[in-house]
Image (cartoon, rainbow, N blue to C red; front, side, top):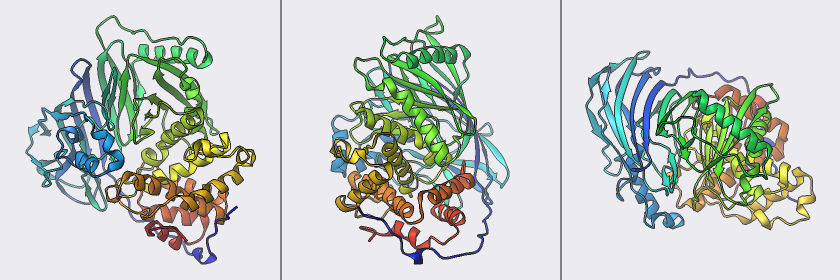
Length: 527
């Protein structure tokens, strides 16, 4: 088997790094929203308290109004899909949607707004401030909104009785040390969001079950979910216990609270089976775990709660303690270019025909994004490898240790390979990646610059995990884990850039990794 090796000149001694002064904006959301399941719409109102922690005075704030990406076929979303044959199936009768009824106020006064100069970016709007927002000052921004959900084909929308409310509310763009990061919604290309506290009140028909970012504060509802979910988790082969409304009214109001999260998403259906359990971490912390899946015969979701617990436990041990009180996975409709989509504390899994090992791998991967997206809030649009690549590296380790399985090769893994120790199994898997998979683009390629989604996946996930494995093969797994733990401890709930990750790695390892990190910009194979 091939042994990955990094020459000694990659590692040079160095002195302590000085840390630049770090800042990030501070947001607090209050949102009320109501789902109309007949019209497939959400009517909402939000207020955002925006504190400017930057050294700059701001005259405006860019807002994402991402539901407008679904409005017509001239948007950046549709233009990307049209140019990518790998995702062309999404354009067969695609769903349309939009956001409307916006009326921004700033500290109670009606605000002037301006569209983006790019006509394809109708999902970005500039909110002008009537007076400059000085460093350290705060402003209250409010608006009503009305969202028409598209029929599901990308991330947000509806499918039969299931609703996926993702990127569904007006949201300030990130302002960091490099400036504003206003960006259109894309199918191939994820997000970059400010950390915030959310108080969200959702009104839904009373027979719907909801999984959402944050902790459910409505006592009768959460008690029902836990009671029913615990029964289903303990008796997985019997007839599932189904949810019954906790109110006698046509609708119910559910209250959610979340801290230090970059987004808020929620999913609702009348058909969900609930599983519930807790997972105790090595540190002693106890985390609630839920799964929500469709009530159908021969479902492979019977053991889904175990995979959520695996993700929380394994990643906490390998990288750092899970920073949230709950972890959830929701079964969604099939998506022909994605196994799932992650949000803080909740993930949508869109590979319904997966086998047991594949379902475990995709759930663990999506739960893992609570580290590489939520707690480590890198710019996923510019540096896809910082979340997808590191996450895939740990997903592959989990699959090897748990099942001697790899989700890329699936059933093609020979039986004799499954008899090997996990470390040898992984070495052969990575050798096969290196030899058989074409990965032309550099890792450090912005998402929208990849020639197609196949190349995006190969490079952002596989090439980047191979890059991490090369480091492991050279310096050992213990040092790699120490580097990740140092990175996590220094940058959790912040916005790290590649140079921040490099410094944290070097500090833990005690050597320079300049040439190793330079490989992120190398096209083609690493050798």
